[in-house]
Length: 345
Image 1 (cartoon, helix red, strand yellow):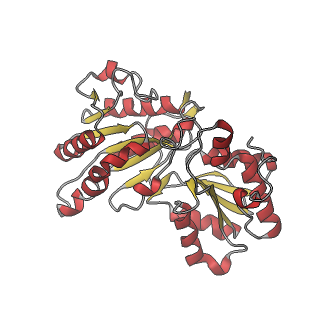
Image 2 (cartoon, rainbow, N blue to C red; image 1 turned 30 degrees about the vertical axis):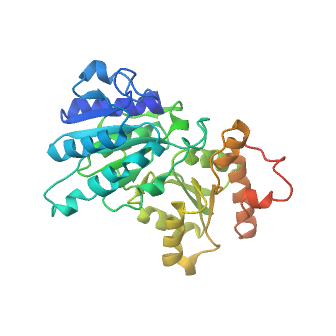
């Protein structure tokens, strides 16, 4: 077992799959000579050469279209999008072409491609480069969408994504790139797609999270010794309904913690599913702890308030467990008295 940074785990996962399968290729802006804008393709050009590791022009529509064609022709391309927002100019290639070829061909064609994109706040990149934007892709039939939350998931989900017969979008929280963790490599290190990870068992409340908020949830419940079952969803679509439903059946309570804004966030689907199937067995109403419906601020102090932080999560959970009533969001609670007393640690 090695201790790796999140970004290193991604690079090693790519390396291991490229060693195992000569049809795997990777390309994108600055992925070759510069080894990736976030060093997630470190060492790949040196080992595999410029035919399999390629820099592209600044043309997301062009190189994602090339990925679709390469996948249909028999390769397994891994295309990197520097910031998720940049996929906006090339969504047609992913949601209309890659996601639909298998169906349009009556199952004769497959598109085994991976699109990697860095997402999320916390790194000071400002409102045009700090969104998560899962809803751009998670509502598209034909796409698998995954988000790793730690170095092990980064390694295991990446390798599993490359092995999928259809298109997979991997959303990588860039605030986690420097984070270190123990990583099991090789076949034993694979993380299955479509299966959530139960990171902590408990009986008072089920907490479902994704990406960088998973670590924040664990910090909150461990510090406060809250009897919570913490689930890393890992695969956003298709999400693991069985694990989540079984946990809520045990605890009777559900809280979803997400970096997405309140309106349109992925957690709404989780809550709706639980309410539809388990309403009569719930001990309290489910609720979501989210980011506000606002652009991601650039200022460091304001950006720290955007993604739910451990102390805020702890206070929300403590109030919920004590009263059985979903508490107000911080921006509602502080609407009249400001945010002077907010602790973002």
